Length: 432
Ligand SMILES: [Zn+2]
Image 1 (cartoon, rainbow, N blue to C red):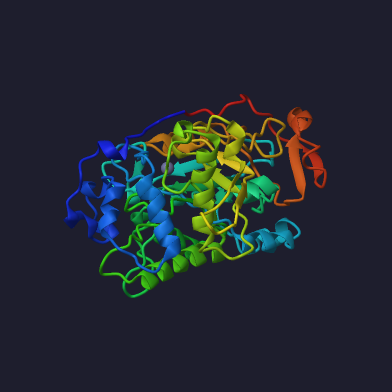
Image 2 (cartoon, rainbow, N blue to C red):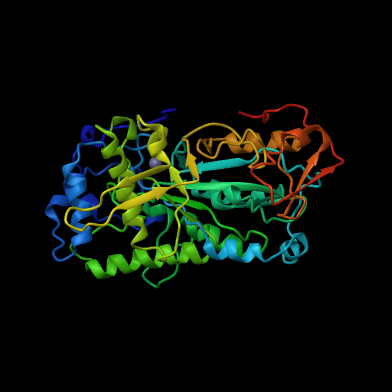
């Protein structure tokens, strides 16, 4: 469902001065304006064919760049799926190893691995807070309060693989962070991550709390209007191309190495429902895939795709599988296939072990003002709907009342164990 969307072409042309923006923690509301893609036309980047191709696509396509929340730059979202994390957990063999270094708060609830999972959706940090803007202080508070309530992050890749490697008594939560704006992840001149960015807050929190071990899902736009292009790594006259690309690579490497997931959000946030043809929809997705993969390890498989504005292509399946023939003259097709397609809004999702789980239409819980706070309060009152881990990724523990809902065809390799526990009082989560 569409929640937002303002065509870039409708925005006012920004002044050149805005192209040089202050450091993220000093950003004011003006930072949020979409800078139309035409602004790039003055910037030459000779000798970089990939970059030129990107910018060419950007300039030539019709003005479809859109932004969520009215004041957000259209962006890209990338999720960093952590191959390392998956490899680790595959050999972990159960709860004991997982909880060894996690002395953090647990829920105190009985296992229920058919319980619902929140897939949180964030965009940028800033003020005033709105549906697509979270105060930085509240993002920090979200980390604190979720952890205190016994939640632990997992990636979409882990959900898809049924690899919920968190200790007994804790609940998974997926953080998805869309549009790759600069305030999400910024390296300071001294080489450290700006502690006021989302990546910086996450990094510090994980270092302080070893149980916060998996990462978030970053749905990136490689080439939307600044600052939503690989976390605001915009080409400018002052920054040599090599330096810019090295910084993007450094960020992507950091995310991959720290168990985050990278997800595709198209090249520049085009509305797929407005594609003139199936070929164009596949081009927008395929160019995004291709442009993100430049910075990823060669064997990295992007498994999550986030629909810009939640809009589907006319041929729905193209959102999860398709082919773009590639750039003219290169004879190198880009095939993409995603296990998860993220919607823009919704409530909690069924567990991946539930027959009702549809990975090709994953609802997301927009972290608007007060909403997560209400949801956590509701879970305090009644935790029966919540997914609660048994600590063993190879065993699906379910209350008797839900045993028939386990998708045994999909999860043949896992043992299903019926456990004592309160049956959910209601199917849906309490707070909306
Ligand atoms: Zn977006």
